[in-house]
Amino acid sequence: MILDAAEADAYVHAIARDWQTAPLSAADRALCGFAAKLTREPRNMRPADLDTLRAHGLNDRAIHDAVQVVGYFDYINRVADALGVEPEDFIQTWGQ
Image (tube, rainbow, N blue to C red):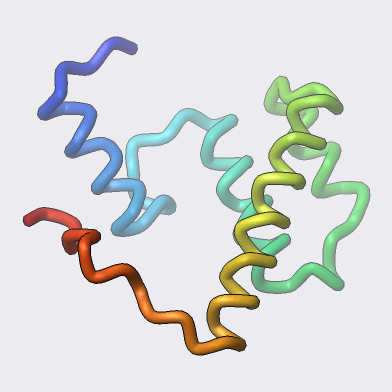
């Protein structure tokens, strides 16, 4: 799928608003669900969660990379929250 700039912007905003209603492929939807579960309830991760990603065509390398990225962002957000880090003032709010 090739999108022009306006379409790409709308696509990214749809995902940021609510990935569950965004026009994602089945594989991307499964990956987002996996990321949400890993972030919100990591103690509930099971081998079946990996099997779901594999069933959508992700190989072990892709799954490993996804876990690393999700884990890193979870970590850095917790550090920032714990230390009271404020968002940078030069970053504009989406849509402006």
